[in-house]
Image (tube, rainbow, N blue to C red; front, side):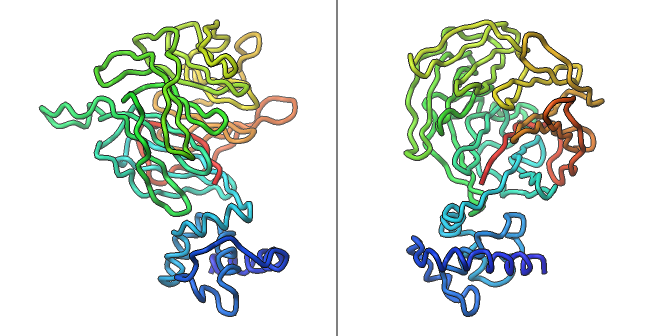
Length: 362
């Protein structure tokens, strides 16, 4: 019923668009013939393209043609042509094995993806970012706690996976040049940068590389100025990649013009953080958020255990994810005054320590 109501709305919204355009650049819609009675195939496809992703499982139950349509590349192209976008927070936890969930903040609900088809069970210490409407999961290795006795597993892999939410399919991308775990990762100008971490020999690495998702190719970058025998993470501020090692008071920034890493004093806590409007926010072990003006300023206490939580930013909000009840605490920043807190829907499937989380626009 809900899917049908949404479809009726989509029909009216799309029909005017189609009358103006009269031509759609979809070449392979023959298998979708007669999706909606008395409507051209192009219009039917654009109507389905305006249906939110959370309703796609219901659409798949209508008939085989609709099931093929909502899992097709043609539907993805139609969404792009209509400029129909949705925002999500992508979350992966320790349980179930290699499972991701997408949180829809507009509708306050969760969507479960198919399991990541990696050969590595309980993959951990990886990085995740989104580019061009896709989720990318990079590197990582076996979680030692899940290995059977005598099994050394894979310490570090160079695997890169992409997930397309519209087609609901995982795809194996070109591998990183250097296998790595616990490394810095960020997106700059539509490219994915990875740096540091530990390589397959279990040693710290200064190697850095950049991935072009459109051409599916990795290129080596200049090495970091220094490495450290500790976890590192990355943030992108003012269009530049920053690499910070835990316990180290300096940050390494990549200068896009000079194509070189520059070392500077870290003006904010070296704990993992997120960026809102080019300001870095970090969560300290006191369960409070701070930001990087002239000094660390406390902006809120969340009354939760810090261990195992994840953070992600979306627009003007920070999402703190995890906990005993696995709720999401949303920190909204307005114009002036203290940030406002609200509680979002509890995670429906994932449990345990948050392994990774990131925002994504589809």
